[in-house]
Image 1: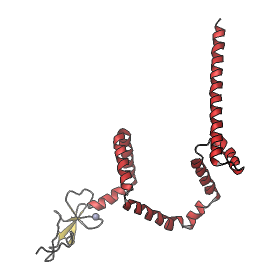
Image 2: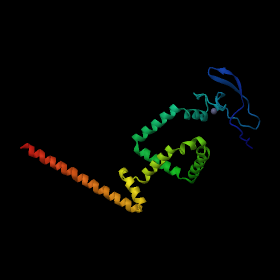
Image 3: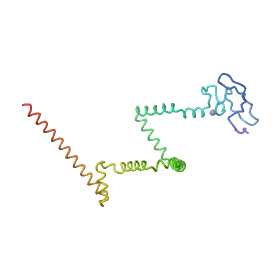
Image 4: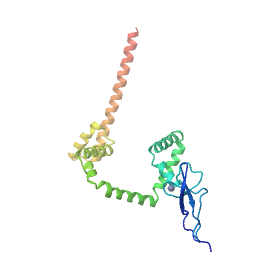
Length: 211
Ligand SMILES: [Zn+2]
């Protein structure tokens, strides 16, 4: 029978230092255990997992990734690289977007999003300092403007008050919208016609001034 696999980490005993490396003696594995021993007995300076002679950071792979991922400068460089690649290669960008859309729509991903939203509501939105921010009059006003910009995106800003007045006077929303869009269309036509007329008149004046 094969001995049970227990741990990839052999027991290490610190023996001394060599340059920037700690030198370890590797204990022989206990009977019945398999020890995966790295080639020089070096260990990760964060978690004491064995690392190979090739490691230049002194960390094991997972710890090294953790350090790289938490470095804001490296993060910024990565983001810049991604943006550059997206700008140069629209097809790559489209493929990435398609893949992300698929990944984001799996049942597991949907559940994870719901869970993260609930966690945020519980742990962040319920905090009194956050509540003070989100419930302030200023924040409410900004939210209102943002909702208006979304809901009334079809309506030119100078017409929004008229639209509201029509609704409070009892006009149906769809009728009010049709009336405003109609008026806007007619106005635009009239403006274009006026511009064309002005240009034609100027042209006629220019011609007349030649003689
Ligand atoms: Zn490590």
